[in-house]
Length: 271
Length: 312
Image (cartoon, rainbow over the protein chains, first blue to last red):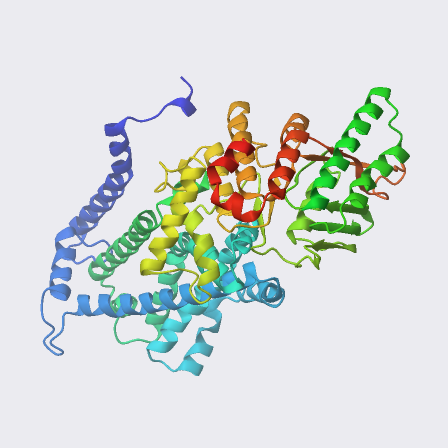
């Protein structure tokens, strides 16, 4: 049978899914064990017990100086910034996308502008953000917003243009004004597409968050990673990276489930 | 009332003449043009008047010198080769495009330059909203005009709108599918939904752009029956673009053929299409309708069953 026609069965599939993860872990822990056998003070590839000890110290032991749990404190502040950034970007991107995609009078000035703006490397203007918005929370949130809004807006503009012209005309023959047409026809059809676009920019959002935290912050997951880098504390960095990955993956999963839950018509309508 | 009766008689003689010319095979362009202008002369206070309409895109002429006059309640079928401008004409009637030259009058007034609730439309595809259930797809037509701010109704007003929508859906045979999404419906049922959606607005004109082009022949038959029944019941003026000549002949009370009368092989876009044949059809239906219209309104309104009997 040709390779292209061979499908794994249920059990085989699960095995194939887990296999690369297992291989990665195996490779890491073998290398780690080897290095630690050569030099017990090696810091580059900490063992599982070392990482667990580090997590226990940061997540489940009260910090003597501040009385806080650093790990959870970092997680909350990072997620707050990320949530605010993504939330603002989603709303602004949606408005811009609808305006540029549906209203020809606004498309003319907006569409080329968005194309140009989305080409500005957000990290290059990070210093400007720090100068304009200060070193507080605002500049970090703004970096995420500026980084992902143009991408969201351009994607949604494209999706809005893909709404068949027939539907917009039909809505007008049913008595819709421009406003109610956007509210009842365009917006509901773009919301699931917004969630999909958000899933795609989630990676960039995390990137901008960690970059901003690394440069100017006093807490946050990115801040902690860059702080302990000075001591080469791989036993802290690695669990943090795993935790960030897990959070990002959960957000992606959540957005996917949300699409399915809130917009049951979407899967069928694509066909 | 009386001029409608006489117009029916006039069209009858016109039909006989058309047949004769077809039998003799003397179809010369001048004769066609003459016949095409005949109905315009017949109805004075026409419902829709097309006056010297041209439609050009750049140097491409699609329609030229269209002059038409259509009585209320007419079922016009538009046929012709692909790209001969029949869909363009429908878009002009819809208000999706404006004519390059000339004007179209609806009930004596210039046609609104954008689509509105006076003209319903059913396209071949993408006629229904994929994100709304069948019931809401129809109810939205009642909600949009009544709520300028949110475009939706609440509470008892919403319930009433939904009930009215359900009634309409019952009529087109979708009473069992109120809670489904359009993607769960077959092509024929989606078009039924699109028709119900258009009719809930009680438009005076219904525009159909190859509405059954994508349907199986059997389902197409059912849709024809449904459409004729709704047309009889509502007294709508219908314009239907179709590729299927048989469909055009069996459904319409007036068949219009779009074709180019002049053709320059070196500049295929230089001349536009005109209506080369304008054939009155299905005299019986037209006559029944005219007879009904002569009855006093209070009589026909109070006798809905009798009326349906006559019409069927």
